[in-house]
Length: 454
Image (cartoon, rainbow, N blue to C red; front, side):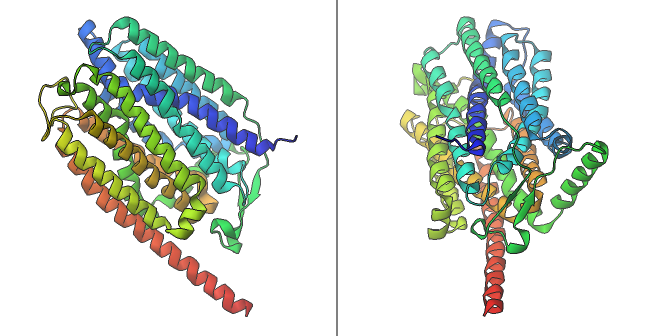
């Protein structure tokens, strides 16, 4: 039996990311809660989770401009491995809780995140062709989102008491560091593939743009290559369609902040839920993951069928409706001061764990609706500029996430929900507008081709 090498690379990439982000996404989910417990045990420690996460995404945003230049010199595999090392260092830093270590590791992780995500986009493209592009992207998304399960299930089992003591924290941090290290080791086994591929009409690419060439790492003039990559990214950013799409990217960054670092903490801080509220932090992460995987399967792996039946815009409208449901249930279910610390206040109803988990499921599913369609549209619009296009997506997303984490430590829950509602309305409108224009241009091009052939 012969195993396709490119497909094997996609599986290794997916599983490696799944292990690394099992550790990181679990850590992001519990960081506010565990740092609060560390402060209770050690008054000299003043590290703030939202500040740490804001630093990560601020550095991530800045380095996204430099990541295409770095990859133009080293290639995507080196970038992916470098980024994975940064994730291991960040998660391991929690074993030595010091303010300087926490914030320094956050800076390192922001740099690594830019490399690993931009490298992943290019490497996935290198290992795909016209028939496997959508399939490989869907497989990666589904396997990657399984990262929400194992780590959060472990937290659900371990966090059984309202107070999280030092021995439990050390055990959780050690296990998560081990998982990230295992994922890094798996990513070392990634192999190089051919430098070019051909995209067919089935992927929505005109015959004039069929060939996509992936640049090899520069040998003779690395600095010039890096500079050109940076200029290309700036030039692409100021195009009208990218500026419109950036409003959608900003929303995905704000909601990423909310479901990955704030919402689960709100559940854990709501005393009216009961003594099991800390374990519900992990369970919330699991339900977010279930929503992500279901959405990724429906709109990623089966994207071509869904788009043909419903259209790309309809998937985003579904995501809009599901997220609005989530925001409304969170508004009535959780107290306004729940993002900050343990509170005995309640929302407009007595807090319901079932309704809280329904909100988690809706957040995950809606996020998958938006992200799968953003990836699809970027791949259609910017075939020849895939690395800078995805880097700019991550830039806008991470800027929004950094700002959101910065204000989350002082802004009450209801105001945060209002910001999300305003931005989702704007982001949905701009995405549907760009998708409509793109679809009309494709239809006109197809009509002209049919007339010419006749």
